[in-house]
Length: 287
Ligand code: PDD
Image 1 (cartoon, rainbow, N blue to C red):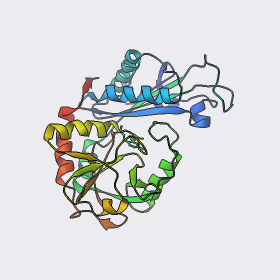
Image 2: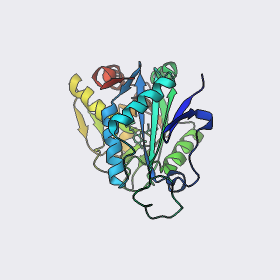
Image 3: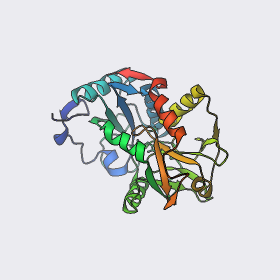
Image 4: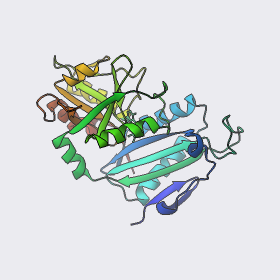
């Protein structure tokens, strides 16, 4: 079945989908995005993803392309046309097409909107959960507005590639003070030496992941206490359990970091428990 993408008002064959060469997303990474999971034909935590999109747009003084209602209709239509029951949608808004100039284009420039959807294989995700992933650590070399979900992801691309070349699946950033920030495309959690579930506060230095927020709901429901505090690379390496969260994967266990075994080298029980409860607790919107 051919994939379909939504590009600036039209549903087009994915293979032919294109934006203008002077789109500001293409030239300046002047755009924002969201990735949202679809599970059993339900969009997961759509409201929070669209709230974060509005926030990202606001922080960059970018116009919203349309009302939330219209946007939701298109997201559902793209998911339907691609017959996605389990997978994700990708949504990107840029400041639009304009002659190349660093300053903002005129206020009447129409924002560009692209939405795609893809099917993922639950079997592959389950296998990763069973085995656990490997990670490396790297100095965090990003700008200080990583709270905005922009398409300017070059440091993240370099970090993920470095992880791949080291035989790992994620790169975990460490700031200049030796404190863990987040993964190249995930938030980082650990169960510390005292058995307390810990994640970094989202006020500064990380993206406030929607999955992270969802996990806070889950832990509250399960009666698991979460400490939001900073932690060092050393503490991460001596944790009982480490896992990473993102809409693409919910909660992947990390069993090795920089070649050192984490805990007993097997996925931990806390991530397993939280993952099992995640979808019951999350908001679900039918396609
Ligand atoms: N990444 N931190 C970073 C830097 C991210 O890129 C992401 C998500 C997260 C987790 O956020 P959420 O739980 O809302 O997915 C944290 C997406 C999945 C991506 O770029 O593909």
